[in-house]
Structure formats: structure tokens, C-alpha cells
Image (tube, rainbow, N blue to C red; front, side):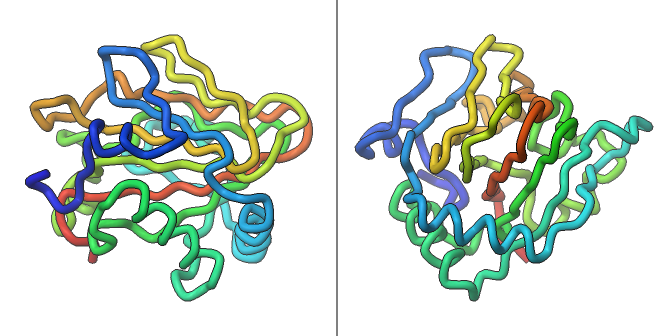
Length: 210
């Protein structure tokens, strides 16, 4: 790997329990039971402590595009350190290239409509978010609880939907093989119909964070 903020499909598939989703359109993986129940519970407690309304880059005029609540998790918390250690053991990405871990809570009716995680190079907020650390490379997302109904993550382009399972990891490369942003990573955090959904997300960048 030439980019310390990157990992690779061969590196990830060599890790026990990680499965590559069969599609030529993007590099997408899942791993059930990536996090143990006790760690999931500790991370949920941290999200509950600091959650606030979520925001988006490049606002599109749709005030209901992302209706969840969000918080950045303190890297000094033991649960966050354990999560970071597990991610590094899995992906080998230099932690200096990672954004702070973000936690999200989705109540009944809340969603994140179809979107990509990278910043659009022609978007009005691109310079604001990417001038120092560059664009996002990989996304690592973990469901922290079972959801009574709804809350799936749907990758529309490849017709693949993942149901929330406590401790389950999803990860994907936000770029094509040539390094350009991959629109096939379009995904939808679908509405929760009953209960609540908790997830954590860890994004990595092309250059050191901050």
C-alpha cells in the first residue's frame, strides 16, 4: 500500500471472519460479531451522553435528508480505545489518518437518505473539509444493537441490503481502482420503524487528520 491512509482488499480478506460481497462495482465487506456485546453497550452509552442533531456537507435544501443524531466519541474513553485497537488490527491503517470515531442514533422515522461518504470534488464545501486531510478513503461502520424494525443499510447500485445486527461491521472503499470517488458506494440508512438504531462510523483520509 502506497498510501498510509489506505488498506486493500487482499489485506482485509486475509482477516478471519471478514467476507467480501461479490460485486465488481466496489470493494465492500462485512463481518458479523466484530464487536462483543459489552463493548457495544459501552459505546451506546457514550452516544447517549453526547448526541446532537446530525448535519451534512453541501446542503441540498432537503431538511429531512439526514435526521439522525450524532456525536464524536472521545478517544480517551476506554471503549473507544478498544474499538480503535480492533480496527487497526483489522485494517492496518495508520491511526493518524483516521477521523474521530463518530456515533449515530436513529429514532423511529429517522434516516439518512441515499448518499456517498466521500466529499464531492466540485461541491461547495470540498475545500473546507478536504484542504488539509484530503478526501475519505475507507469507511468502517458497526451496528451496535438489534433494531426491532427497519434501519437497514441499502446499497442501491448493487442491490444489496444489510440488516442491523449487534456488533456487525460493514466496510468499503470509497474510491475506484484509479483513486477517483466511486458513486457505486451510494447507500441509504433506511428509516427505523420500531425501536432505535445505534451505529459507530470510522472514516479514514488520504492525509493525516488535523
